[in-house]
Amino acid sequence: MKSVPLTAYPRTLARRGGAKKLREAGRIPAVIYGGKTKPQSLEVDRKSLEDLIHHSASENLLVDLTVDKDTKAKRLALVKEVQHYPLTGKVVHIDFHEISETEKVTVMVPVEQIGEAAGVKTGGGVLEHVLFKLKVRCLPKDLPEALMVDVSHLEIGKAVHIGDIKPPAGVEILGEKHISVLAVAAPITEAEEAAAAAAPGEVEMIKEKKEEGEGAAPAAGKAPAAAGKAAAAPAAADKGAAKPEEKKPAEKKK
Image (cartoon, rainbow, N blue to C red):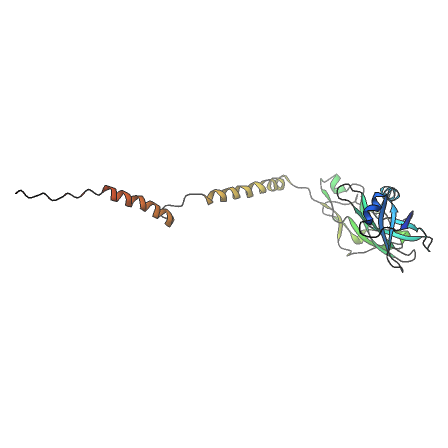
């Protein structure tokens, strides 16, 4: 991978609130670490950095960092992390990892497919992208932008594993060799589609039946005690109301 030039400056506003003032001035807070030097707080021009990221063909960005008034002419570094503001997507902070041209680095590299799988083209299968990135180890100059995998030979039920991928010269792919990276699955049948479509409805129906059952009237002979007492109360009242008045005894004639 070819490195691209970028200029940075020692950070002047490092106190609380300094990062906000830097951004308002068109600068981005940054830090560089690694190598044999202590971490250093930096600032870079917003437009230069965003142009660099925008025109990069890879997720991994290798830069020749020139730090103003630094003893080193250039410092080779990988862009390790770029933080964005959630609402606008603007860059708010960037991390640089200083590396050596003569020491191997371990980096995650994206996997990209080439061609159309035979199982998809002729058999109606589905290409499944299992792993989108793989870990590689190499010298900075040999770092690939992406790992290209030809899938045109894949039939239904076949897969490309980590051990099947031929890396570029000087690059070692890390990971278990038997793990699938890309695979072609059999097409979904109409019966499977119908079963998948019916499953949510069945669950909803069961739920509705359960909710209806919660409010249903109790079975005969199993009335709750409270209901029995409520029914008994009016009966008692009726019994008292129906009781005839007692007749007074007849008076004796004098």
